[in-house]
Length: 199
Length: 199
DNA sequence: TAAATAATTTAACACCGTTAGACAAAATTA
DNA sequence: TAATTTTGTCTAACGGTGTTAAATTATTTA
Image (cartoon, rainbow over all chains, first blue to last red):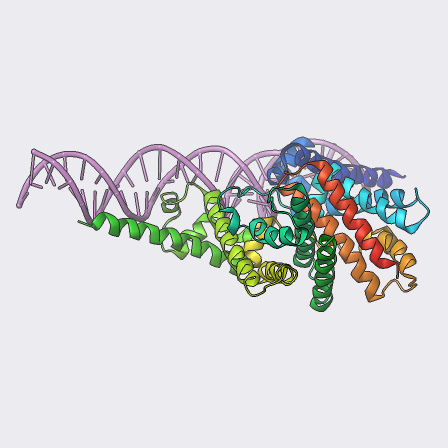
């Protein structure tokens, strides 16, 4: 009798139901609203049942992370396979990554730890004391621009910030890679951007 | 009678005591361990007292964020003022930013939403399905390297990832700036890095 | 049908942020 | 000084969280 299989399939089914319910809640209300009881309600069970399928809440998050990586991988592969030259492929790959981040924002937040962030911090400091105010001065100098609001300045500032912030985040969440290498990457990137300012 | 002042100064004092206690707890046990009751215990009060000084927990976080921005600003200014040329200043500024991120990790996490992240996700996927596996192939091709473990490949991959991830994070947490500009920054950065591969 | 096993729920624990009400200490007023 | 008001502080509680143990119901096996 293959009822063992049937039951196993049923269990597998509620396992994905749990994941789907969790994903739905997060899409509707954000990560901070995800709770075991809410998941249970959505799949019409009681909370303790979930522990029959996942060790704990973190187990559910891990499963979702896995799904996220799978999805991201697919998108990137698809993008790559649409082009022949490596230049075009790199363009497409990172654009796919970019699109994934916004189309599947919830997954991206979970995978790479971008917080919902409550505190926006705006206009609480005088401009000349903010990172923006401080860094744009030499940028303007190099570019020969005197208007601090110039879009070109803003763009360059964000380019700097992005790469530094990106490197930092990656180093904070996954503390792999040697400090030496990262310092080198930082240095390379910064001088690379700086070079683009002078012409 | 200046007792009004004295009392006001005392209140101000416990306000910073609360902030300091919160910061200590976070340094010791991380953000997820920060609770009103723990703060209260540290300053030898009961939890409801804190609401006499801050509207709620978010108010405390906001205050800490402000302190973080102040500190970061100081560090960046200091770095800038140690150099004359804008090139050197930019180098120093972003290095100061970088150092702040790791020396004051807790502040940085709060300010820019880098999560502590529970799920590390390692070796759960075959290499060729991970972003790393997918993106390094064309990188290797362009660089004329066949060893996937080569440090130069790894470095370049992280450079790509950093800038893309940085841009994404910044766009997710502070949804300012037009999509147009950001796409342009992304495109510029990607082709910029790609150019450095071919020589 | 009776016993054993599995599925599911109820109740509880210890924590969380937050609020209302009680209480004591201090300051103000009569 | 005595009475009253204000202030500071705490206790108790509400509704929420993740999680566990025990009780209960349903299903399968003998």
